[in-house]
Length: 130
Image 1 (cartoon, rainbow, N blue to C red):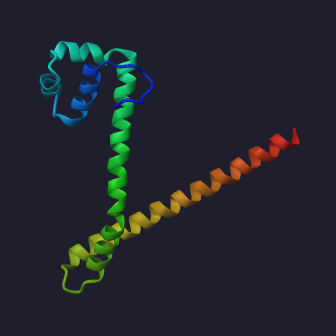
Image 2: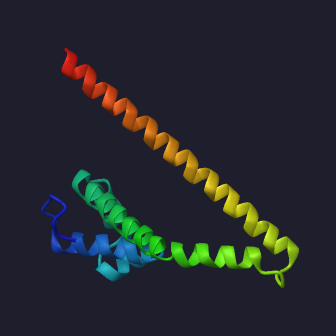
């Protein structure tokens, strides 16, 4: 976990890993070899808190990247079930509903991105006019 901008000790580095990989504070403290009270105290330290937040964010981003890898097969599965005449009508209808909802969300995101890009262009143009 090195590289998050602070010099945490070896035990604190181990605590970061333990907090991300165990179910609760007690398990993390046992794994690191410190008391739960010590772990709670460390979590109040700004540098430890920052490092933990950064570590959690990194782990979350890795999880999202993994899920994104499955989005194409997931979409394919959803569409196959939606058009499969042997699938129950309720299941096909639910798949169709999800396809419509996800399509709507994608369109809304595209619209917002286009608006933001236009606002950014306008802001840049107004800066140049000043």
